[in-house]
Length: 241
Image (cartoon, rainbow, N blue to C red):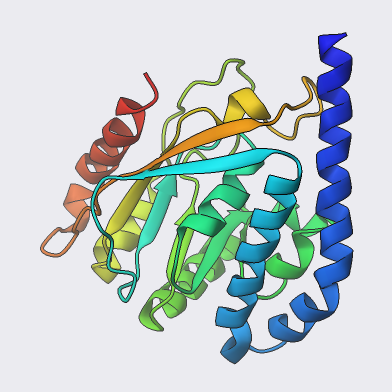
């Protein structure tokens, strides 16, 4: 019975996601047409993430370790265990931002419009795709935008989830562009909805998110990439155990 209720809740959440997307689509489409409108597009994205989540009973509770100056741009790195992570981090980031994510998201009916416009699709098996993605990321950072990257690259198959090894790309980019990294720990999003909820369904509740103090990268060289990656990994993991 419990499994059936959780499955029903997942469909309720998807109903809200689709319904609000249809209602907001004209605004999303308009603001996605030009880069000069991307800041407004992100404002709509935050509202969409909030209203679709809270309507299904997902409440995001943020613990922010230190005040963040959102007049600066950052690379935000977080663990990834749930589709709720996308909504939670969209609400948390207060300046103009873009996601970098796997190319398969271009097939997602809701996320497609974002990954065709503001966000950056990446095929890690293609050197050309990776080069173009990181070139675009550099352009965004130079323009003052922040980047949101899940450095594990995907949601793992383990349940309960474990933190997987991070890819090097976000940390090399942060060092090359001298942009601070904000580690984010999604503590229990997975317990409300693991992955897309298809296997175990979902349930309403409070999702705890810990936003860590930014890590400065000025003065680092590419030789420090591995150390920086391990530092961020350790910081994120510290709130998951």
